[in-house]
Length: 343
Image (cartoon, rainbow, N blue to C red; front, side, top):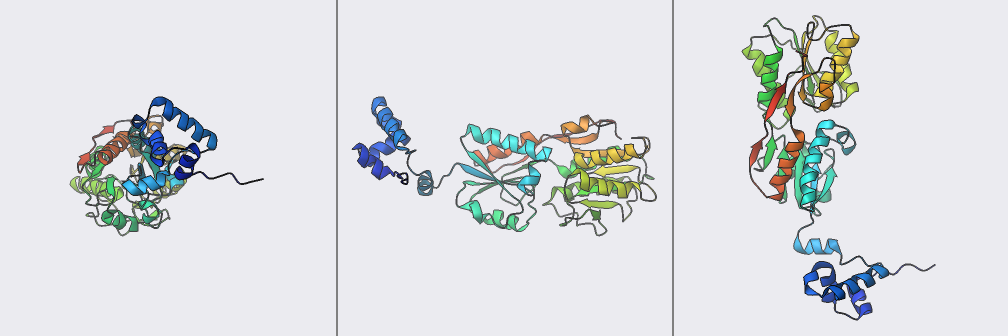
């Protein structure tokens, strides 16, 4: 058994008895050849198993790869199961595909963007990466960068006003200065453990959407003159049912039991609702629950969840448009409160 011959542009041209430029034009500049001549060359190349000039070499020469790396906040495995992230990716890909640009998913737990930097046209960064060293790398890279849900002073960014949205929904949920409040936070700490947060992060830490939302909750709580106990804020490392359930159970078995749960994602709120229903408590009479994101599942819960609705697909579309157009805008996407009956 002999190895299959590896054809190059030069060897193909020699085999067909034409110039290198003629073969190159057949693939890349069809207007330079007659239709018959081009069809004959492409047919011969197909029989030989030659698919055209080396794209990598071409990209290195012209500095354009038609690939955008989408930096995710967490691992690819985790993020593709998250409904909010999936909608964002859907929006990004819908724009890039129309522009014939490919999408590379890049884990936010990776060590260095240099692993792909030489082979992409730039980066769309969705949320603050779990490996915070990537933020400094994205801030200083010469490649085009668009950020979503946080800002690194690269000018092009898209998001919602998380602080204002959290403020508005907290004001809706809190009815009295005597309310007992618990905050089920998402990634408030750089930790993989579901736990109480006793030392609250600085409210001027604006890189993370979790801290922006916490700041909005705190503003509403202060404005309504409600006491938030020091042991009533939880860190949940991932927006997953199991992690959220641990925090919800701890909160609901605390004394005194909270009657308001401010949840930083719908998935966290849905886990809390399931536990409240299992305890035989009534929503919203006994406990009021609010979420954040506006995923479809929130509308099907019992009762339907009151939540901040953000259009993640539209956010992805705008991020991709900013990248394709090489824009330098900072864009805020509108949000609205979805009154579902859980508060």
